[in-house]
Image (cartoon, rainbow, N blue to C red; front, side):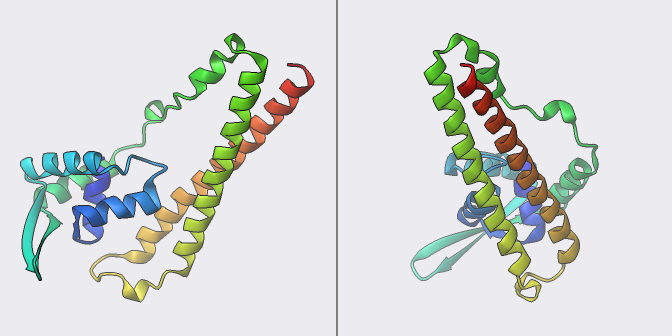
Length: 183
């Protein structure tokens, strides 16, 4: 979570609420968007000197905007340059499939149907996000960032998610068909 927040702050200073809402809208499939998760990570980053808070007053409300520090930039740059780790990608829900033979046939069919429904929803959300990214006006984004390059790799992430959802929908649909034929 910390590196995700640092990455977002590399793009633009934001409040904790803005970070949480961005994650909820665009990255909820990658990580938790709960206020507690975001605030815990931000507190840790502030303690470590990787972010700083600038407090302003707007009307009667205090606004705490977070900025990434040089230390935070260095930590993020080091992290993002590391090779991706295949061993860190886990799907604990596969444990349910592994033990599905211990469930009643109607329970496992219902579970698989519901998982397909959830994957359909995930696919729909990702396609909506992809459409939003394709219509973005880069002129309205904060200056100082190579937005075409940033959006290019964010697009790859969305493409991956869509392809993964399509794979899971197809694979689980075939499994469901097989189990309906021979429970």
